[in-house]
Amino acid sequence: MESEVRSIRVGVPSEQWNDWRWQLGHSLRSADELADFLRCSAGQREEIRRLSKNFRFAVTPYYASLVNLEDPEDPIGLQVFPQSMELLCSPEEESDHIGEEQYSPVRRIVHRYPDRVLLLLTEQCSVYCRFCTRRRIVGGGMDAGYQEEVAEAIEYVRATPEVRDVLISGGDPLIYSEEKLESVLAGLRSIEHVEIIRIGTRAPVVIPMRITDELCGMLRRYHPLYMNTHFNHPREITAESAAACARLADAGIPLGNQTVLMRGVNDCPTIMKRLVHELLKIRVRPYYLYQTDLAIGTKHFRAPISKGIEIIEALRGHTTGFAVPTFVVDMVGGGGKVPLGPNYVISQAPGHWVLRNFEGFMSTYTEPDDYVDRCPDRCGACKTERDVTARPTISGLIRARTPYMKAKGKAEKRVASRVRKPAR
Ligand SMILES: *Cc1c(COP(=O)(O)O)cnc(C)c1O
Ligand code: SF4
Image (cartoon, rainbow, N blue to C red; front, side, top):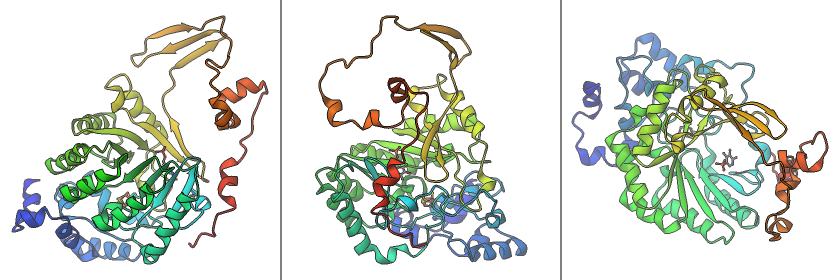
């Protein structure tokens, strides 16, 4: 591997290597650049050229330097180098597979959950991941109407008082300059009901030199600001990415991580355990483990849901509680994220539960026989926050004393009146 690192770094002075704009400017983008780097045969080169007609490629020299070229199934290489399987579309795959467009009241905003929105700031990324769930938009020409549309998105947030949390994502927002990012952050911070801002970015993983002191100095003026990054494999944690996370953490930004469960990359409890341990060492808390979405041409990356559950079961109890991410599946049809995990309830009878622990030990829990469900302090909060009991929840079912409860389609109603027709 050392020799590969040298082959892409050879002759590059470190001040250039450590400059994120140099990394972007020297990324492998064309089919031929990729084929040369991968030392492809003529046949493979032809295949990459064919793929380049459908998909955008980009790999930063830094990320490319982590690839072990001796291994055709290298877990870093698999994430960024095109494969002919991407041209296959299986019947279950769809372009807008998680149904985001039906929840888009204005361009660039996805308002799926009651109190928070996703702001798709850009469709550019420094590296285009082959498994990307947003491959329908990344690398396209959405950035054309940027000024107007971002202003409109911020106005939507301003006009929607229930939004207390804005998640800036894309694409990768850190592809933009400090000035461009700051104008968005300042716009959002000027809205009183926006309590927290989150940024979703893969920069610490694929272009850690993007996390400059200048960037951190700007970001820390917009607290409370959270950041979620996207490490998928323990080998992505390098001296450079660790230093990037340290700069962010030192700027007071709590860091979380989302991992996509991928065949041949991390579909293994041992690898995943190593990954979450390495993340905690660099002050990044595992947040979500995603079941791979049904994005077009990604079947070769998907593992069964049972593999994700197996991984969670191998972590829970076996390691630090906050090293364990929540395993989620994004529902087809716009249902949003559903958390899944192993079941620790063996059986249940009135007042009595039989549980198992992570080692297979079984025991019971006996509930109080004199419990009456009353408002504990009669503070009146529930009179203003009725929502909790109005939705079809387990407690709603128990209280309502009816045998079933239908979903009310509340979320759809919320945005239906404001939804614009999807542009693509
Ligand atoms: C994941 C997601 C969010 C954020 O969800 P959290 O569970 O709060 O992290 C918000 N909007 C959309 C559309 C999402 O997919
Ligand atoms: S960085 Fe994120 S948005 Fe960009 S291609 Fe990778 S997974 Fe998709």
